[in-house]
Length: 289
Image 1 (tube, rainbow, N blue to C red):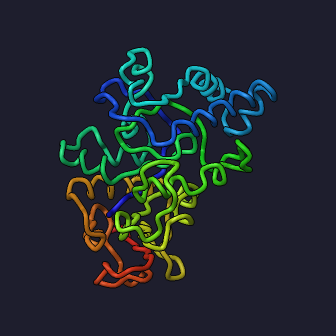
Image 2: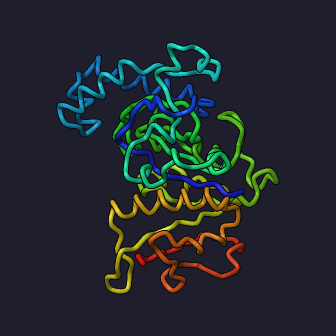
């Protein structure tokens, strides 16, 4: 089973032009807990505390306070049948606004490519944990690296624990006990296109039956090592997701064929073997072409 993880974007919108959301994220109660924690901080410590937590300007502070107050946690997919709630949300893949999502361009994908996205892609989130592309989300501000203590956890990494890895590897719900080595999940290959901030909410919790392939996009070499640049990497990650969807990639070995502005470098990649179906984690390096 091939599953891709990517980071969210800080900028968000309710995309009225998108189709209706087709479900809710997998951990609604945890999202509601975090929402209440943010409201508690505002009530107890004032908006300055939220401004520090969010690391935003005065203008963005007011925008995100408005979003916090308007936020309505959806506890069940049936909530989407309520027009008052449905107007607050849009599918996640269309709700995040940023370089990576512009490059991914879900609005131009055909139905088969969108179906691939829905079954293979996870968007990681500080507030929601992880979401599928068609899941209903509302605009919010909460980065995974934010110094937020909640529900007895010292930060969001501790708060989410192994929940994100469970979802990515196909466990059904928050209460399902770990099934390390279970046949239903054996062979899960996580394609890591997320930033370090978000990837470390998933990768340390993968069980022994899973493996990870991290893709790096280098612009040039320095001392023989690839140099990454943030904006270019975001563009490349979005392009790779779109390329995977359009080509219906199922075999991790096919990732080396990616050639949208970059070319695979076996010499710079770690643990790479042409028989990439072998176990073990890998780092695939793609250099600017």
